[in-house]
Image 1: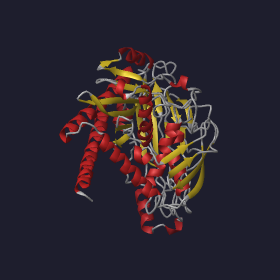
Image 2: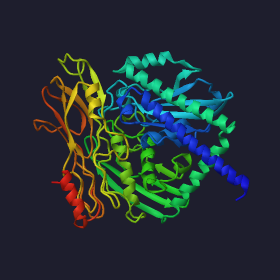
Image 3: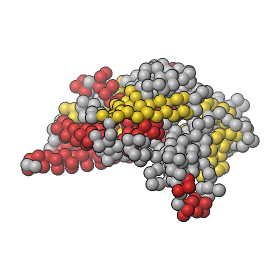
Length: 541
């Protein structure tokens, strides 16, 4: 290697490390300034830096695959409408359009151009889940996207530093918690501004007038490294199917993964058609989680950016539940989308010699609790709405048990009990492991949890449920047993549906039991010491 080439590689590595630090600062600014508990406490967000062509260079570690990988496509949509040459310092763009953003109206994506000495050099983008967007709100009951809340087309949040007061007034008038919604939008703009300031400082330090050369090298290196990992695998096509609960009838997710010289193609031909309720998935969200399933086991040390994502191509037929056309209802798209990594991993089990985990609960258990005047007839309490996140168990892994009460693939944290009780008039009477919920195997599936919710004043309250895995359990692999299905009910024994809004009567409690992960391998091969430890911890009876 000649000296100039070696020096260039060293400079690129230093720039890369600095970009990682910059986007993590961007994400942490978002966490620190966010109003919604879904962002502040659970980390339901994404942050990243893009070149002026709209290619994602790097993402923050903090964030979810659904947001990050969908945001990677979203910036390109923004630039089609707002070319970077027409943007000015102080401009900030936003949208929550499900088909141009991250799949449903609760997620707002904000894009900010970065200028150095008057010239555009990069863009920062961030996405966060805002607790309420009006309409029916976060839940699966809508029949069309128009019912689900306020849809903001791509436009300006700030123009040359001046806030779009007309837009903010419209948002405040259409949501149940205007203070939080407006605060979250300012939080998104602030995190991009923090990232932009750090990037400009970095470029001045490195005496760079452009990121173009560094961006090309970063993306090319990631593309080539990912392709090198793919070419180590056998070529061919492998198939898998998964049946899950859906809203009122089962949904079949059908997948074919083809490995070839130019990359990996994931195709969902044969998947169930669009549903009449809000569990449909826009294609960008399908692509986000399906590609993440590949990245979990292939090239997971390669940076996640436009280069590595470009060799994983995901398609789904128009009109199926994974490529739902406008104006399909999509609010609870995560209940389907978060199942896709397990579907893809099932395809990859054979070419990877079985080195994939068993199926897990996968989809978040994210109840939205509502109550007070205007929600519950006769209630005199203050209106409230809170969205909390909880998780089941993951599937048994190669050489390891599944993870207990862990949100895979979303990666968000469960909402702490104290936060829920501090921000809403609710009491969580019980939060504990759910014994025997993990599937048996040489490597046990992770266990779920049991939670019990009540109104602090004894009033009735509403819950919008988006729970799957109640009728169809996470399957084990290689002889491992299925995990236990989820369950939701009132403490008097009344069973509740997994999907939709229902009322918990006055003086009653809602009980949620999340699903356990599937086991991996023959249960007779389990280490007796591991089994004894499970009994000691109360994870098995």
